[in-house]
Every structure is written in C-alpha cells, then in structure tokens.
Length: 498
Image (cartoon, rainbow, N blue to C red):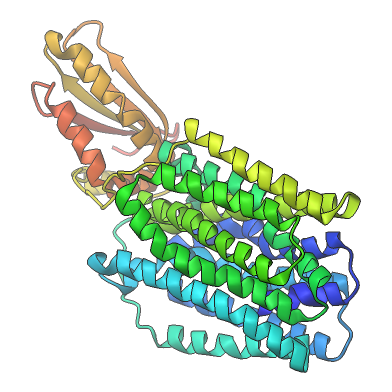
C-alpha cells in the first residue's frame, strides 16, 4: 500500500515520467548503498535488536510522510527524500530479516517455511495494492500512508517478544570493516554464487521498466488509483500462481531451463505492455509477468541462501541485494529517461528485448542444480600454544604452513587435488595462498597461506564446511603421513619475549 501511494502521489503531483521512475530509484538505491554494511552488521550484531532499531526508524519516517501528505506540504523532491529514508531502514534490516529464518524453524522445515514466506509476501502484494487503490480513491493517499504507520506496530511487538537464544562466542568478534572485507572476499572466491548474482543483477536491470513506468501506464488508462492498484494486485496474484507452477516445473526440469523460460516470459510481457491500452488485457499480462518474475527471483534467492554458510549468510544476501537492487535502481533511471525523451512505449519495448537477451548469460553463468553442503565442519584442531606465547587477536599477519609427504608416483594427483584448496583458503580469510616443493626432499610439499591476523585465522577454523571435508579426504589419499601444520606470526623487531 505504501508503494502504491508513493507512486500514485508522484503522478498526482504532475511529475514527469522521469520523476515517477525516480520513485522506484529512491526505493531501491538504499539497498545498493547500504547493503554491505547492513549484511556485516547482521552477522556480527544482535539480530533481534537490529530489527527493532530499523523498525523504529521506519515508523518515524512513515509518520512524517503521512503528516506532510495530509497537510498538503509534500513536494516531488520531499517525497523522493522520505521514500529514500524509509527504504534505507528497510535496506539495513532486510539481510538480517532473511538470515534469521534458519533460527526460527528447524532445518527440516526450512524449505517449507521459505515457500510459505513467499506465498505470504505475494498474497500481500496481490491484496495490498488493490486495497490501496480503493482507499486512495475514497480517502486520499495520506490514508494509505497512515495504514502503513499502524502496520509496523505488529511487527515491533512480535520481534520484541522473540526470545533469541544467545550463542556463546568461541572466536574474537569481527569489526564492521573486517566483516565487510570478509564478505567481499568470500563472494570473490565463490564462483557459483557470483554466477547467480550476475544473472540476477542483469535481469533486474532489464526488467526494471515494468515497475518504474507502470504508474504512468496506469494513469494513461484511468485517472483513478484503483486501476494502478488492480494492476499490481494482478502481478501479485500471478506471483502466487507462479510459485505453485514453479515447484512442479522444478520437479521435471533443472534450474537453468526453468529460469530461461521465466526470463523470456517476463521480457515478452514487458514488451507487450507497450502496445496494450485496455485494462482487462493489461491485468492478464501483469498476472503472467508476476508468475515469471517470482519464478526467477525466488530461485535466485533460494540458491544464494543455500550457497552461503551461516557465518556469512547475511553478508552474502546483502551483496545479492546490492546487485539486484542496484540493477533495479540503475535500470529505473535509464528507462525513465528514455520514457521522457522518446516515449513510455519505446522504453517498455526496449526493456523487454533487453530482458530476453539476458538468457544468453546462461552460456557463461549457468545456474547450479546441486548445491554443496555448507554446514559447519570444524575438523581442524585448534593450535596448541603455550599460554605465555599466545598472540592477541589483532596480532599478525599469520603464516600457516602444512607439510605433506607424498610418494613420487602420486605427486601429480596430489597437486591436482590440493589446487582446490586455493579458493577455500582465500574464501575463508587468506590473503595469499600457494604450494611449494622441497628441492632437497622430493617427497615433501608445503602448502602455505597468509592471514591478516591471529583472530582471523581462528575464525578460519569455524568457516570450513562439509563440502570442504571431501577435498581434504581426497588429499589424504595421496600423502604418506599426517600433514604437519605450523603457525608463524609476524615478529616485531622489539619482540623480546623468551
């Protein structure tokens, strides 16, 4: 209802298509700007408290928006600023909100809970816009904004009553800067996650015209906000049906063909809207677009959730949001500018063609069907260090070496297997990684990697996954004895400890 009210208010103020499209930009740009710090905070801070803070912020902004609208002092620029501020709170909250789901239900119920959450969200998307259109027609946009203010109260009460269990910390706490760097490093060394994010960001950019220019399309058909609400309601209803159809499609086909068909339908629907001027037909096309949209975005979101381990899940989700919302924000500006300079129909047609063309990315960034097990596998023993020699968490850098003894006949097999360690070590904290052979002992190979601090290395012990365990088992097949692990920390010149 809030989204419908903002977009319709901008149109009612007589703003150009560019300003209308900027409403979408103001809603999505905060996700691009604040996603990384929001994800880092969501992984290192108390998630319950963070949600309460952001909900309180959004209530305050929503109250200001409702008052300025009801008193008639709202302007296009003020509307954009308040929309941005409201979305900023949402951007700070969303990575944490998504990451708490595994804390609320058991692992066996996680898939069902995710599906239920998607149905609930899209049911609200189907009903909310239609209610907003009726309420705006009867009582004005300010009334819809007041309903949004009240809606926050229930969320705040539920989260305040949530008794989140406190988990004891076994490693030094991460800083905001360190957690952010760790997120970027993780994604850079996770090629499958990068492929999913690339596909999502490009598709969002191409298809953003559907949302950015829809208020202008609705205004051209009917001067009443009811038509706009019905179009968004049809989109949400189609998304609910699409979620049901998607489950059946995934049971028969792999992710890539399902996603490609969904993208093609989404692009074709966007292009078709450019030439449709009858509300009944537009409702049908919007419902089809909603089904295609939810099929793509839910599959991409589910893949990102399952590809990221718990310690970095909020941060990976924040990067996913950064890319997708950045694509929506940038695309809204581009298609809005084209709509202002050429025509809205031309912008929608070009947007649809670009969306369809993104299917070609499947050749270089194919979506996976099987996802590795990223549950924790804390197999490494903690280093045994004398108490008076134990370094502080900020001391470093730390050089870790692992010595392998291998029979000459198995050398090539060992080197092929050990190369798979490289992305894992870098993903979990190493700034450098390499394998070296001993010139004096032909059977001796040493793997070494450099970590920024002792605390970061301790965190590496908790970041290994069960999928990493399969690589270690393969490496062990080619060595003669147990590997010898050594930890060396940078020696300061004034370090005179015995």
